[in-house]
Image (cartoon, rainbow, N blue to C red; front, side, top):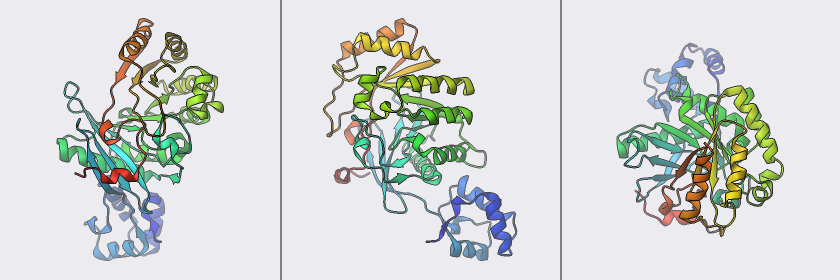
Length: 356
């Protein structure tokens, strides 16, 4: 196979061009085509000579992902399966604002791995094997494709990105951070890092690394229980990354970055929805400045969890609110096309659903 040109830095590309008798400044032009203009072929690089484009085409390739299928929910959410250069599929989601929300808010939910090595019991991706990490360009390409969908269907560009799709972002640390750099750089897509949220199931060592790297994006922790015994049951990663370890790591992260943490919490019926659970969550949130997003559970075939009832949810949220915790209740989007949180799995059966 030819070398993926997006693996090269500008200095590396400059050196290669000079070795070929080409002018070194062309490297910056090529880099701009790749990361600012999102070119998918060398033929699109029209300010390069035909001979230079031919030379690039002989030695390198661009490996853009392709939209394999689009499905549109009744609520306007669009789920896409993306085919990678090696035939693997990942999924990403465009989530438009609800009518009463900010109409210019368009959120892309992107994947960071093909499958997942974690085994969270409530998540469809957790029942898949992890085949491989996505590279930075493959994550970047999801953002470009979903931005294109937002403009095509809603005439509004992307405003926010969440790394909440398939995979555990912090187990693909290098590529995730490189993708954020490509998305936020002035020589890339130029988005603000404050518009980006990376969600983790809780890898304490890597949360500390985020602090050391002083990242500018937002961090969300999929918590779902502030009790080790309960969290062990639904999220086996907690056995090696206990709540105490996570709390210490989050404190370190906040000290280094000054960024408030978001705790994501699904209320499962008769499991983690009591006032005692709410008290445990409140005590955990006191460790760092934080807000809590209570998330609606989205059923999957592999598990028997159920959403708590509305009255219990109100009491749970009301308790947190009475303690001064910022609480948002998030309603699921795209459930009818398996596009909601926890439902992404790239299932073969999805291919039988309506294609836009």
